[in-house]
Image (cartoon, rainbow over all chains, first blue to last red; front, side, top):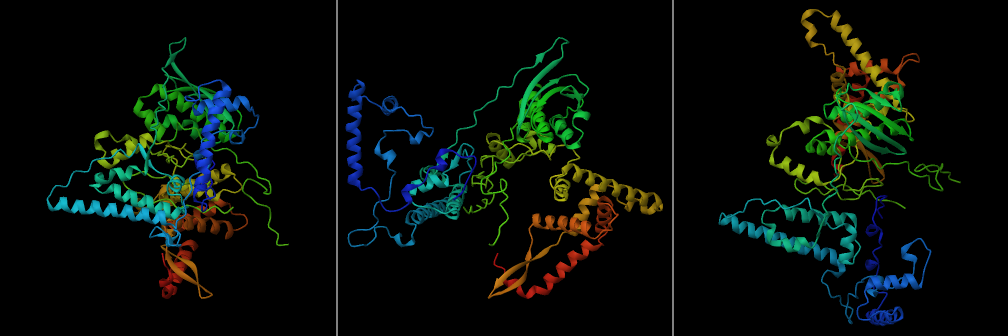
Length: 350
Length: 232
């Protein structure tokens, strides 16, 4: 198993479909569906609503009203859903009455995976043949750029759910390599429908952060504020224009507050990146965290403040340099049975 | 629970597919590494080739990780020096490691300047005074080309000569340098002094670390007969 700390619920769902032959017969599932529909109509009558137009949302609301539960886990509360959502899709029995398997690749053990690879390779050979035909007639089309940025391949778990079979990481990477190879061929447009089955749209990062306009204080000097965090440190920075490069932290000069060179380098990083080292003054307040965390927090705050002084392109450059991302790394918790987060107790043979 | 480490896919020119799961990272696997070097951002739009423009377009839509605290865009931050400082660090005392590194570079500069002022006019140009250049050249000279790996066949373990990757070469050179300086020095000699001595010797292709590298090469040459045991 692979474990990710940053996960979504989709990643954590177990693939029950591939775990073995059917635990639920078709007749059982049919009965469950009939019971569900009947129950839906009864529930609609109970709630005084029209049974014909009773949607799933109405069911959820009705159940939450009739069976209130204080449990934390949403999956543990009483729920009434269509049987296809509760009983996951499973593979049917792969062989007939005489014991002879239906699929010709059954004895490989991973029939769906190998048949998929077989199909994809067939498509690739088709494309190559088509390409050869076109080269014979000198009609090769130019490389049209496909929008690779907006799409991603299916994850391993999604592919497993599609094939109803367990895959190994190696298998998955081989399949993705084959798809990538297919896409790089110039005439792969013929098989676009096939490729579309395995790619998903990535919602484009439309988190367009609004850059705040510059504010002006009593002296007429332009300034801008920013906030930053790192581990447990919280910082706010006010960056003034027409300055001499003086930096004040919690009303103490930066040389006294950060005696270590590395921290001062981090404070100057955004200014140095934009070539504005001696042009701005900065006054910041910071609390929490340690020495390095406070420096990182101020760095983020000043980078955010500098966005108002600078063109859009430079903001994009700052983002690509990693100056505008909040560092999500925090101290890992200690686990029971171990001495620290990773360190185990001394292993004693007896 | 044993967690198998999934190897990264080979980089393909068109599709950015770093979506194989990384072990235990707090970042989503789709986050890319930050590029800190200012020069790459200076190039005007027209000068970029078609491929680079494509890469930029794709990168504009992907999220990027935060830059680590040891890295900065100033001329003074060097990735090799940072790596070496981290390897020298003990118990997380980065302040001490950095100050030792600074003192080493200062010591190298002082020694070279002494030599420079004592040398006759015609030799003055050949003496290298930039400590960073000396450091890089010394590390390069210390890197072994070929290494040995243990392969067990039929119960016996053989030392098989194996080509090394770039990362491994750099790591070995730095590791040898540090262990050499920690162990073979007088009680009273400080680390910066000993390090600067070793670096200058390595720069001139002499000294114990270069000898160690040659010994390793000779061993690999001696075990040439087993080279066919390697299957990768």
